[in-house]
Image (cartoon, rainbow, N blue to C red; front, side):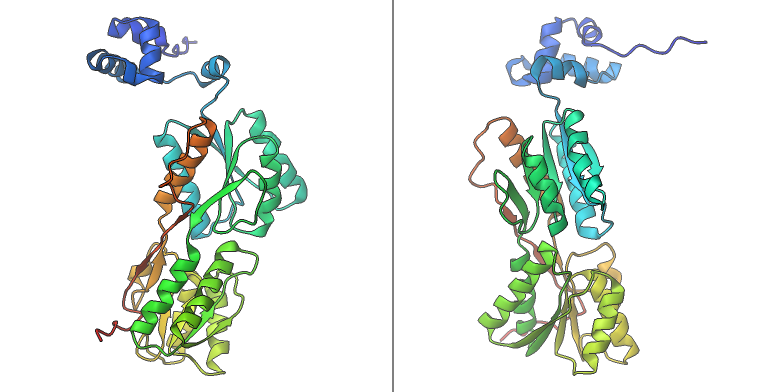
Length: 340
């Protein structure tokens, strides 16, 4: 039986680069205090030897593990999935590892996830909290460790701040765009009432109706699926279709497009359609879907930065926002905006 390979140590890196063990440690932890030439030599040795820091040993010395917990509900929906991926990428770029844990649907499952993460030695926890069912998890985690919630509009939990995307602004941008295309009536097919994103999109829509003084209504709630968009559009057609339909997400908008096609209606000539999320492939629908794009990569970086600043007792810069602005992606499912 062959002897398994030995893990490369800091002493090996020191020997390869011709410096002391302490210098290698400084390059890893406070590189700014090491002369550039020495630092480059050590980094080259690290790359050649494939050295990776021993997280357990570091935790014993510093009482910090550089390990962050990320909790989500296991949803396969585009928004929560993209948010979780963005957080993982941002953490890796900042020198942190992520322990991802999915919250079970049962109460027992929810109670168990926080102790599991704490037992793994995480320095803090990011909770992707898009709906009410995640509030008890946030509250439980916040009793034991620093927590940051990634959520559009999380109701106040003591000691927990939230970072998200400005959903109300996205909905207002949709309505204002439709007004500029000449639409005089808009119906919003809302998402689930227990989801914070859906609530904020509905609120933004209603505010925009009032400020722009156009006819509009809310229909639903739907459940984020194409089926719910399809069924609501067919039900709406029996009552009279508006100039434009604003679906709560792209999946529901896909159902709307299918229903309108079956009814023999043209998009956008007869009815304009707008979604939300800018899901992968939205631009390849027929017609290409006008939708609201959320800055998920920036959201991950912002959430990670705020939590790390809190962990390291740094003053959070005033320019780090709590709500990031979305961007309206105008495509062929809405009419061109009027120039005057």
